[in-house]
Length: 375
Image (cartoon, rainbow, N blue to C red):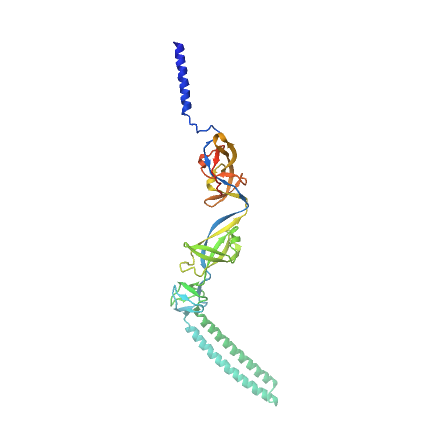
């Protein structure tokens, strides 16, 4: 009886073991071999000694010249002939001061000048008569010298009066405020009747000539933005041609950048104004050894590094595999959205896996797709 129970138990164990064996998936490989049927795409690694990256620089549009203009003299503002938004031409009269007091002073000095000129005329006549009398010894040499000195004194007085009149004329000219260049009036700071101090701003002007873009630049981008080179900038989303005028010979103490000035194309249009922000994209070349790989070929590693899986030839006919994958640590130097420039444990000609990394583990045997994708 006991013997029969033991035999039945042994038979049940044997049947159960065969059933479990029959349920096992024959496609699952043993640890260390990976999925035998997995097919992967790869890219061939080729190193270079430099890479090019795009940088987006932001600058501000400026007028070539902007001035807050006023009178050199104090006085009452008599008239302002322009208003905000008006276009003005060089030397055009924009405003004027009251010149009543200057006109009165000029009339006074003009009278003094007439008086001194009459004295000069009289002194010349006197000197001529004295010199004639000296020929027949009718006067002494002392009297001749006194006549000559009287003429010199009268001429000096006339010259002084003339200088005073010219000075008043200069002040009268300065009572007219003229445009120093072709410009647009951007602000008006004073109105008629206001008493002004010397140098007090009356109008603000902005030059109508080409606008300038000022961009702070550092690094190797300075080698790209050399004087005379043409570039495209974006102002409000619209592309505009610009030409580098010059790089200023000093570096900002805070940002450590160098200001680069670019002249905007004259056909930039009315939508571009001083104060607008503009974007300038430049391509700069950096010399560093590395290789381009697709971003899809990288997986996050440890200690801030990344890993790329390299497929090396290692045929396994029983698994239908031709290569075996192993991770290689790499460092990303630069990326442009679709690919990355990396350095690390990669050699020229290595085949890096570029798709399906979530299905690949270290040491897995795979086969390669036909045709290698190039990064």
